[in-house]
Image (tube, rainbow, N blue to C red; front, side, top):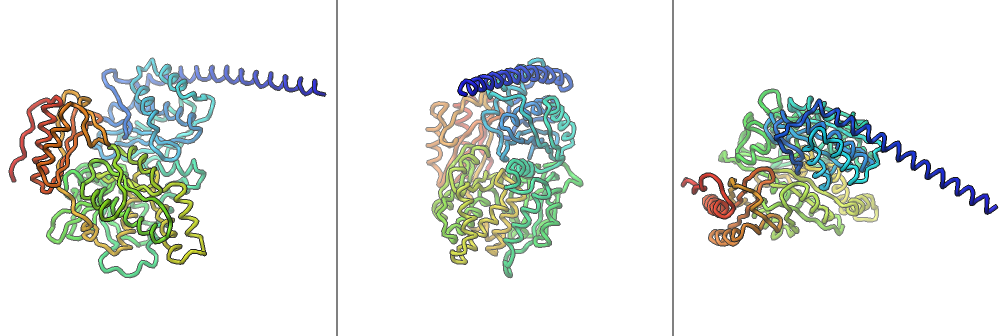
Length: 578
C-alpha cells in the first residue's frame, strides 16, 4: 500500500513539474510575442529623440503634441502594473491646472493611491527608451518585479476635457491592446472620480458603488443626512458660486446638483461653454493672483469656490464689506476640517489621534493656530501630495492639505472600525452615539483616495452650516502672515540640497547660515529655499509681519541663492517701494 501511495506521489510530482515546465515555455513564448508586438506598435507612436521625460508626483506632464509616444508606453506599463498587483489599476489623462495646450498622464494603484514610488523609475525608463528598445525595457521591468506575464490585466481609463484627450486616449488604448489587457474607458471624469471608481471596484463595492452615478449618490446621501434637522441659520446661507475653471469640475458639479435636492443653491460659472481651460480662472489662478477669476460677478459676502482643471484642488474666496478680496486656501480648509473632526471625536468619547500634515509652504499663522490654539499636532512633509498622504497615514485621523487646496482626510482602518461600532452601540449616551454617527457620515462624504474638489467643497459647506458661519467668520479664525514666493534661475538646480522636509538647506555651503541671519532681522520672519523638480530654478519662500518685510526678506534670500548657488542672468533686484 505504501508503495502505491509513493508511486502516486512520484507521478503527481512528475506531472506537476511537467505542467510547470509547460507553463514556463508557454509564458516565455507568449512574452516574446508580446514584446515583439510592443516594438512593432511603437512605429505608430514614434518617440522624439531630443526629448527626455520624467514621471513625478503629477505623472508625465508636457505639451500635448509630444505626448503620444508616452501614452502608448503607459498603456504597456499599466498592463504590467495590473499583472504585478493582480488587480485593476487606472490611468488618468490630464494636466490638472496647466494651460489647455498641455496634457499629461498618471497611473493610479488599486486602492486609488498614486503609483507606487518604485514604479516611477520604470515609467521614466520606458518613456525614454528608443522605439526599437521597448521590448528590452519591458523585459527589464518584468524581471525586476518578477511579473507573471500570463496573468490577466485590467485597466480603467479616463480623461479631462482637453481637446487633446481623445487622440492621447487612443494611443494609451493601443498600448493596452498590445498587452492583451481588458480595459474600461469611462470618457470624461474628474481625476478624483477615477480614483474613487478603481477603489470601489477592487474593494468589491465595500468603498461604494463603482460607477459615476454611485459617486454622486454616496456624496449626496451623506451630505443630506448631515444637513438634516440643521435648524434655522442666522449667518450661513446655502448659496455658493463655483468657478469651474472651464473644465470637468463644472460638468460634474451640474450632475451632482440633481442629487442635492435644492439643499444647496449652486451657480456654476466658467463652465466650459466659453473661455479656455484654466485661463484667468481656476484654483491655481485665484491662489497665485490673489484675486477673483474672470467670468464671475460677485457681491461682498458672497461665498465663492474655485476648482482646478481636473477638480482635485479647491479654494474658497469672498469680498468683504469693503470689497477687499479674501482667500480661504488649503491651510484654512485644513484647520476648519481638523477642528470640526476633533470636536466630533471628543464628543463621541473615542480615543483617536488626530493630526494635520502640511508642507513648508503652509502659512506660519495656520501652524501656530493648530498647535497653540487647537492643540492639534502638526507634521511637515516634503512638497508633493504623495508625501503628505504617506505622512497622514501615521495618524488615526490624518488631515492633509497643501496651501494650493489639494488635500483630503485619511481614517485608519482601526479608526473606521471604532467609529462605526460606536455609531451602532445602543449602550452609549445618545450624544456620543450621535457624534459617532456624524463621523461615519463624514467618512462617506470625504474621498479618502485623493484630494477631491467636489468632496472637499461639500465637507466645508457641511461644517459652515453646522457652525452657522459666514465666510468672514471662518476667515477670522486666524490672520495669515504676508508672504512672497520668488523663482531664481540657476545653472544647475541640484546645487541646492535640502533636509527637514525642505525647510533647511544643506548645500551649497553657507546658504542656510545666510538665510538664518536674514530671517533674524524680521519680526515673525521665516524663509526657505527648494530646487524645482522639473526646471533649473530655485524657489524662495518668505513670510514676515508685513508685506513689505516679506517682500524684502524674499529678495535678500534670493540674492544669496543667486550668489551661492550659481544664479544665471541678472542679479535679483529689490522690490519697488509701494
